[in-house]
Length: 176
Image 1: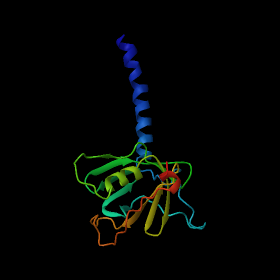
Image 2: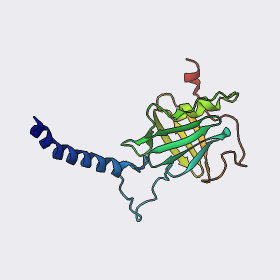
Image 3: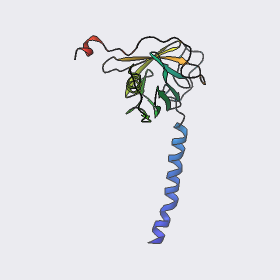
Image 4: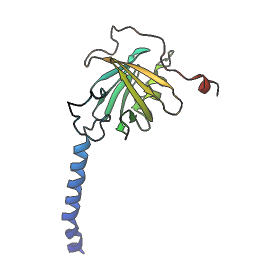
């Protein structure tokens, strides 16, 4: 019996090495570039990426998130956030899965910021970027959240102006 189990060790080690190599190759994957291929520079300009940038919720500069590879980190104005994102076949969609995990401190949330960023970073979202603004839209109900590019390393509460809540629900969805 000892010999049979010992003969399984080399194939199991080889399989583990292959799986580990595959995980390592995709660990820094760009959710906005599912193929991992380099875009040709002579072609039309490619869509700006959301990866490697810090985005603050336009309605509350205390709430922000950052995408590094497929990892997400941030703050909902009270709690730390972390999670992951995956790209989809369409270049304008990203899947945040079941959402981000967060610490569980209690803080008053009169603006609904904690709920807004939690909802924005959950499920499949269509993303569009226009300069320094990023809009995440829920394809099921067209609800959208606007984020503003924040220089990396700067405090989340930047001196940039804020506006009223940018989470919007279409009239048809609000009537339900």
